[in-house]
Image (cartoon, rainbow, N blue to C red; front, side, top):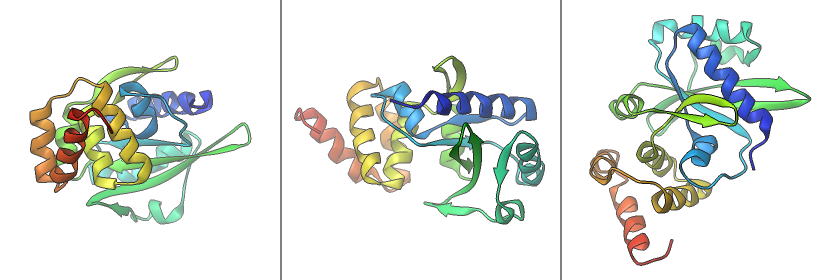
Length: 190
């Protein structure tokens, strides 16, 4: 199960973004808990819709809100991940360090996903989370072992817009993987 402190961190990050006037959505393991089977997760994954010119101000405000941001991110560096830009923050609480992976909306797919975000309850916090179809697409893009299992669970347990899912899977070059997973599901196994 997810550590309560990570749920609180999601709520804290949501309040920070709302106060800064920056739209956000929670992704990753916490979003899996909304759309499928909760599982342990050690970090907070979010996407923010932020004009690149506002990024330095956003990072400065994050520091003022007790998030730690490494100098190389403050000077404009971002990690590329499957065509997406990501920066990392950290939050220290009760002797624990939590990583906060912040994806920046830079692609047409991310804009489409962002437009479909949904309100959901995480612990005692109401936050915006990524829609299940977009969570599947994001996890198919990254393609790590844990992501594969998450996709299986979401496909099995969520009501999905398969037309949307298939269309974007084709555009993102993950359609073959998605079709294979859908065939497995139809055959009764994952």
